Image (cartoon, rainbow, N blue to C red; front, side, top):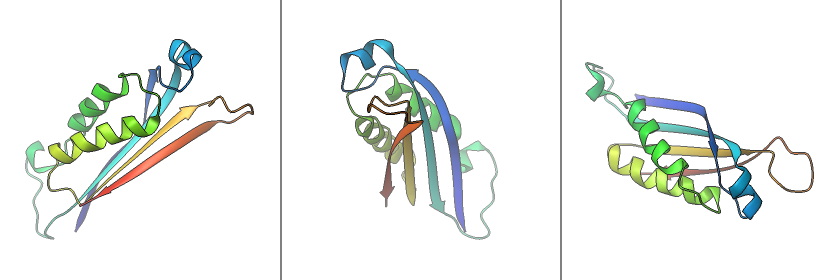
Length: 119
């Protein structure tokens, strides 16, 4: 069986962006993380240590989301590297980071970037 845990659109207020005004003003960001792993069909979920603990996912994301960077891709990469260490038996780690109202000169609800780490 494939076992999946997702934290969907965790909302953060942070100061990322290429432009100085973005770093000063800040913005709202939405992070989604999905981790999949293969399990035997008779696998028993007994205790939190036998699961993908989403509290660990959140702590890793929190650690990196407040380190100001120019690119959303940099944040995703840092989170992905650490998640791969924390959940060594993963099959796939999918991370999406969205930024509200990106400064593109037009009305835009969100910009999004994503990466999928495969084992």
